[in-house]
Image (cartoon, rainbow, N blue to C red; front, side, top):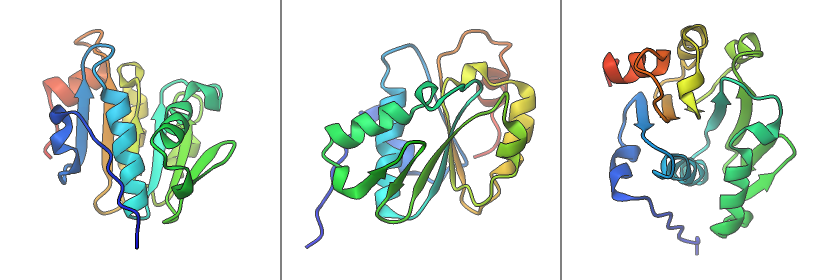
Length: 170
């Protein structure tokens, strides 16, 4: 018998399983954005094979990414049997792969990534317009989705303008 996995999310994240190209979560610190998206992506990666890019504008090392949050949740939620945690990536039993990248210094290598199904952009308030211009068309798999989490700082930030003031369809 297959083990049933239950990963609970706050009610405000009930729409996260919906078919939307852009899933945008913003608010203050402690609003459970990062933990909820991490839990969702872990559950999704167990359910089906996905290639998940975890990005932020500036990432000098794996320690600057959501890698630690994901690995802590794998351990804390009792999901270790479903994942192989490696030095720079995480793989699930379905073949899903979490990869981590900084956009600012590596945008051309991100541009050449193939077959990315989901892209989680953490601390998206720092993402430049140039990074968005390259990242968005990189996500071309049918059904690919963006998970965008950020703490708004300024209405002129590219992320806020693009996804809150002038949201794209879906």
